[in-house]
Length: 325
Image (cartoon, rainbow, N blue to C red; front, side, top):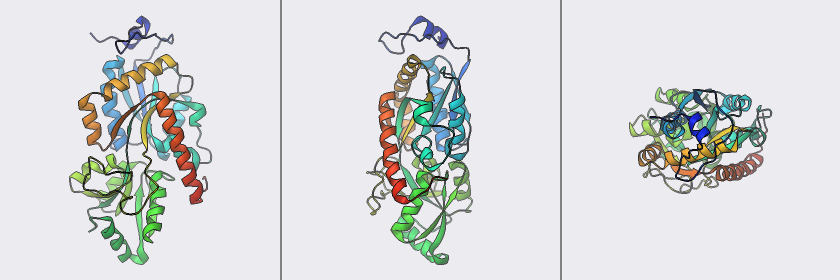
């Protein structure tokens, strides 16, 4: 018989063999809402749906994915800020919304430090450059040559959100290879990849998990990844560091966040459940197959990584001369 979360919390049962002290916020919701700031069909959505399904058992309740796409996760983050701080709503997101967006948007409508609390992290990942199969390029060198053959060496590169890590990468790649690359922002990776598959845009930058399935099918080609080492899911694809573009070895992260004021007992309970889920071999294998490096982080560890990554990007953004919009 499945134990309900209310019963679990009320009885003080633990998710592990250790004793667990229940928190006193009795819940009236029937399912947990898991916010995702990007459309269905993208990499973040796929990750959220996998974890939502697996978290049902240790939490003892349904977890419903609620896609609220737009503005690089800003809409979902604003919704989280106004959500009840009772464990009924969480936000699964990556570094862009938490660490970068507040630095590049003048009035984002939320402050991660004041409005959110880290609940737990589960993975790191890398961004990559991919090209449409409509282009002849099979390597960065071939892509650079192809762009130079276009009108005045100018070409568009899709990015899943404006003022995101991929947009800064477009600028740096253009500078590195003396190309006139123009960012083309989308509302998430799914519509960007749709245009790449249709040949409307020749290249895109996003996370490995966004491109991996189509890369394996030969519909797109990932030609370079960031980070300090090659990815297990793409062992034949070189890093940009190997090709001479350095400074992006610090890896972005994925984690869960809750509204400020969410009871510590609930955060502990969810964090334990998350640790239990990502330790399962089948879950780990599926996340790795999506291009992630599984790395469970306690709330404190996620907070530390978030602060460090924010500081890295504060320096990059400042040195780029980018002005908050």
